[in-house]
Image (cartoon, rainbow, N blue to C red; front, side, top):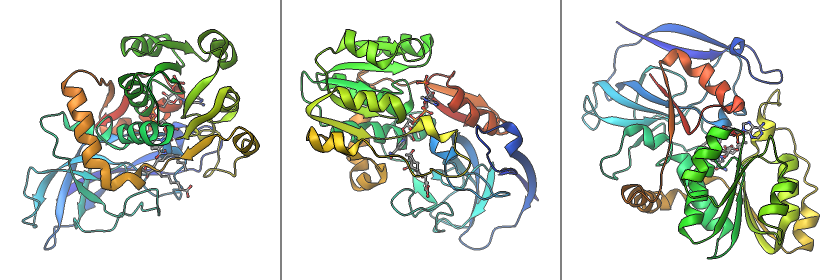
Length: 340
Ligand SMILES: NC(=O)C1=CN([C@@H]2O[C@H](COP(=O)(O)OP(=O)(O)OC[C@H]3O[C@@H](n4cnc5c(N)ncnc54)[C@H](OP(=O)(O)O)[C@@H]3O)[C@@H](O)[C@H]2O)C=CC1
Ligand SMILES: CCCCCC(=O)/C=C/[C@H]1[C@H](O)CC(=O)[C@@H]1CCCCCCC(=O)O
């Protein structure tokens, strides 16, 4: 008999998420039918979108995990194989590998529950949830395709020490740009300096207006937006004519919402029109056909020590809610992962 643990969301969010919104339950798993596998989580990803994914009360919150096949009745998935599995906050799961993703959202989340780890050489498997996974790819495509940085451009990155922002900023440096990054603690500021960011500031101590007067008095060419809100309104005002903005995320709102994202005010559009700005939204999955190529390029940069990363790993599956709340407290540096 195999007993699995999984988290459920037992209460709806009302304002900021709290630990009381989550409950850990245990359940007996069924035996394997033909072609099914039992997987065990090694690492679970903790991402900002988990806070706004429309989950019903008493259901298991969304999360991608790196898992190992523990038992198998499917020759394509032998015991010991590692997979990426979109099965939510569970430590053990019985499933058919072809099963449709229970968290599927058109354009946002993939159709498949299980996918192979990319074939990139010898990297710790947790990296496939971070720099060599969805967050790293978001930084890569958002920066290269939406911001389209040119040598000498001034690039601003909000949440610069995040999993996405730290990749976007480092690639902007690789492309010969002057990079300004903001983050909310001295520890993150120090890390960003060590990554080669030209100018960094703590947005909790210095306003973006003040920082731009000092670091970019003539304006910015690109803005990689992870936060939205008034910060991004200021950044948009600082874009030079023909500037480019990648609207990647709106984290300043996520932990204030009771349900999913409310309609956002879009008074930015007039500015975009008048200044002929290119502003592009990003759903990283749209670049799925190019993931392998992008990951190979980033893996090479990691091997050459040109692209660096940090992880904060919470020990133990019971830490899932604390890890999620940590995103919005913002103390930990680097990609948040739970080691099951
Ligand atoms: N469009 C797409 O396809 C994708 C978009 N994203 C988006 O990218 C952004 C970053 O994601 P990811 O790198 O995984 O995040 P991380 O979990 O690595 O980092 C999140 C950071 O955001 C900052 N933050 C938290 N709350 C607030 C707040 N209220 N106001 C301002 N900053 C806050 C904190 O850093 P600090 O305050 O210290 O700066 C926190 O550490 C998110 O907005 C996410 O939704 C991510 C993946 C795909
Ligand atoms: C709607 C907020 C999303 C903000 C951007 C972001 O972080 C996107 C991440 C996606 C990633 O590609 C993998 C996912 O599953 C994420 C999207 C899941 C959010 C779906 C919300 C849909 C809805 O509001 O109806």
